[in-house]
Structure formats: C-alpha cells, structure tokens
Length: 131
Image (cartoon, rainbow, N blue to C red):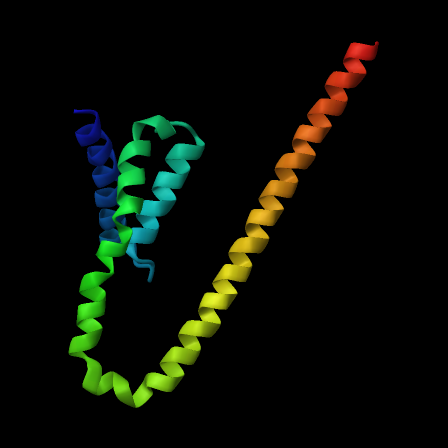
C-alpha cells in the first residue's frame, strides 16, 4: 500500500505538470513543470522525501528501460537520420561532455558550500564551548 501511495503522489504531481502545460502559454514541457513542482514540494517539506523515496528509487532503477521505445523510434527513422549522422554524433558527444562538466561543477559547488557551512557551525560550537 505504501508504494501505491508513493506512486500516486508522483502521478498527481505529474498530472498537475500536464495541467500547467495545457493552461500556461509557455514553451516549457510538462515534465519540467512536474520536476519543478516536485522540487518545490520536497524543499518546502510539503511532501517529505520519505513519502516518495522508494517509488523514486524504483523509477530510477528502471530508467534504462524507458529508452527502448525512443531507440526503436530512431531505428524506424534511420533512412532520414543517416544523412545527418555525423553532425548528430558530434552534437551528442559535445553536449554530453558539457552536461557532465556542468553537473560536476554544480556538485562540487554544493559540496563546498555544505562543507563550509558545517565548518562554520563547528567553529561557532567550539567558540561557545570555550567561553
């Protein structure tokens, strides 16, 4: 029952993202609306992480399976795509490298901010204990 509830929460947020896409005249995919809603709800703790963690972990585990239909679609479009294969490969490689670099830098920044914050807290606690 816990898993059904967790999937239900994720589905409701996804549905709200779809509604936002239908009603807002912005060129933003519904999935982005859903992700931003989920992020906001998790940050504000309106939806605690524990209420969606197991379902989210499961979805991440099966994520490679979600690419099979897209790959099959590419195979069906092979005649059209073979003309632009070299530019497509170059774009894919370059953007993959850029995304990896940006993700690494963002992670590094977050870790540095977290360690600086914990160091600051340690210093404050140490000063209070020596007084």
